[in-house]
Image 1 (tube, helix red, strand yellow):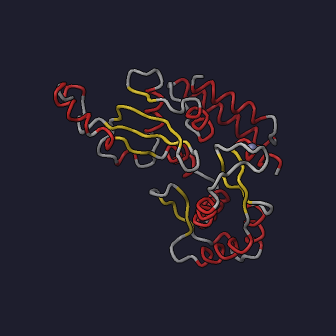
Image 2 (cartoon, rainbow, N blue to C red):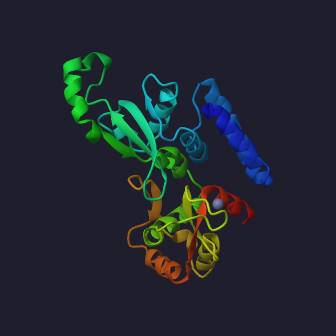
Image 3 (cartoon, helix red, strand yellow):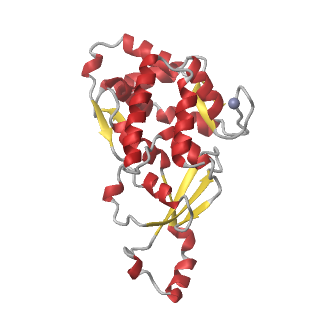
Length: 267
Ligand SMILES: [Zn+2]
C-alpha cells in the first residue's frame, strides 16, 4: 500500500475510539496532511512508518525500487540527519532483530561519493563488494519517525517521556531476563512483543508518584538529541526518586503490539 493511503487508513481506524479533542487533533493533522500533499510531502509519524516497514519486512530497497524515495524521506527525518557527513543512502534493508523481533532498518551509504559522476568504475566496485558486510549499518527508524514530532510535545508529554527514559534500564532488564520463549500474555503471539506494565500501568504509577510531588512544573527537563528523548535535567533528584519508586512497584508482562494497542485504548 502507498504510504499516504496507509496513513489515512490508520487515522480512520483510530478515530472510532477517540474523544472530541483527539478528533480535533486528527483534523488538524489532516489539514497539515493536505498541505503536505500540495507540496508532495508525506507526514512521517511513528504508527504509519511502523506499518509501512512491517509491510516491507525482509525486503532490500535499492535506488530503482518504487519505495526508495519514501524510505529516503523517512531517513531524512532523522533528528541528526543534517549533521551527517555522508547523506547519500544507496539501499535500505528491513529486517527483524533476532532477539525480540523488533523491526530494524539497515542502510548502506554511497561511500563518500557525493554525486553520480563521482561513482567508481566497475573494477573498484568489485573491491567495494568485499567490504559489503561492513557497509550496512542500523539506523533508528523510531528516531526518524518520532524525532521532530517528539521534540514538539506538550509539557505533560515531555514529563512522561523523561519519566519513561529514566526507567528504560529497568525495562531493558526485564527484556534481557525474560527473553526465553516470550509470548503475548493475551493471544500467545511470539513476535512484535512489547513490555507492558502489569497489573499496575505506567500511567497509574506516574500519576501516583507525581501527586506526591511538590512543584511538578518546576522539574527541569531537557531534550537529548542523541537519545531522541526528553530527559530530566542533570542533577534533578526526581530522577533517582522516580527510579526507586518505579523499581519497587513495577511488574511486567509481554504483549504483542496489537494487544498492547487494544489495551491502551481501553485505559
Ligand atoms: Zn497479543
